[in-house]
Image 1: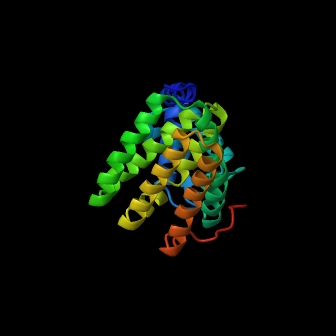
Image 2 (image 1 turned 90 degrees about the vertical axis):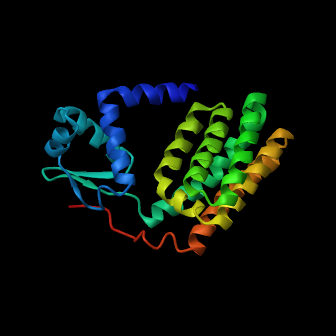
Length: 233
């Protein structure tokens, strides 16, 4: 387990951490809608906790841009807009490329073997159209690279961005054509890393993100995200 995973695991088991991760999951999954008020009392009763960890979690969600807290009014869901998704993929393209470059220098044989097994399984499930399993394997592929890059800070940023667009990624991979393309791109990244070609690994990983975004545009997956004004009271 990486240092980041240890810290993340510890945070998840703290009271504030449990509330924060549950609320973030509920916002990103669409359980709470855009502009919906998040009432401290109702959330604390629902989760069986005091209002203090709920208030702390809401403040952290505000820092992440998912919640807007208006003084003397309350906390409201900001959520993810179309512009946010565009920005996330543009930033991920750069950071995923950097991750692949650093992973080329630090990856272990065990991690390379894990990537190879992941791709073998991904090819099978992509050919069968198993979207849920393919999404899980996609998560696993990136998890291996994030840990292999040997940078806690980069890993933290990439995991957050990966989480923010989880629903979008699942929809994107559900198309058999994009699913197979994504697995092929993973395979090319892995081969570049195994060959210690950091330049090629970086370019391929960045291109992988751009291709994913272009496919979402082509298939209208961003149409559900409207440009909304931030809540300003």
